[in-house]
Image 1: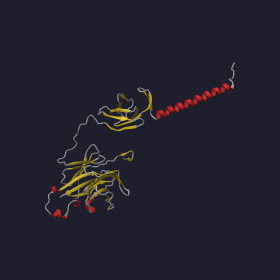
Image 2: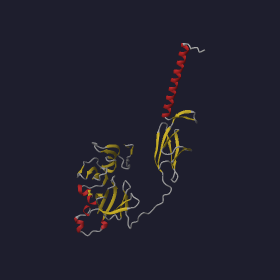
Image 3: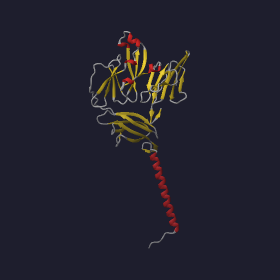
Image 4: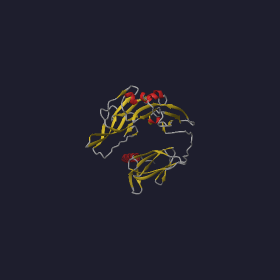
Length: 344
């Protein structure tokens, strides 16, 4: 016959049950926190340690991943936790050269190995066209076009569309009016006195930045490869000597140039040129549309040569100087890049 437990016994049972539930919840939460924080048991030391996490990705994907001597069950893109320390990571795929890297992983750190591009083992070269003469070739940023230059002394080019299975192209030429003068037309000159050098494309792959040199006089030309008649001689249009230039954006109308050592912005369509942003420029690079890294050198005091590296962003009142040295025998340089929309 069932006998109901006393109230004291019921109270003890409830306390035991609630205690067990509380301890269980605390244990589960603790385990989850340790898992999320990437903790694991180190068999060699017998201790609980925080691991590092490695993210893998490759082009092409589905590559086999090896960590030291362990082959992962999953393929790229994937992730794996490793003990702190130095490890060797290998990615491989049939028909491609293996990729390997030895690096250290710190506890709690996330290491990205998501930039791996595997190279095919079969890299045979196929001839798709031949040309009688070729001085230089320039691929557009989107790799859809080639600008071929048969001779550096001629303003003639061939624009080739390489986006399809078969090549197509057309002959294009810089208008004579952009580089010839009345004096040179009257005098007996030879074509070898003119040289045309392509420096870069704009981001859209339509405009090419080009230098025309004659008798040591340089002119900067923005060459419109789709409509050559709309090309512009920047040096002549703005009556300024230009020694360095870079496109900003995709329009082909905005340039940053160095004139008499001063960094300025040129708007071709608006016909305007800005104030000097930075002076005594030695070299500069443009990151994005308006972030400029530069090096400068001031020789005003012959006994003291000042070199500077800095950054200028459009809209700044003045450039940000990162470092300055007074040693004439030391050169400075600077590089910029971006990672997840942040510029470094």
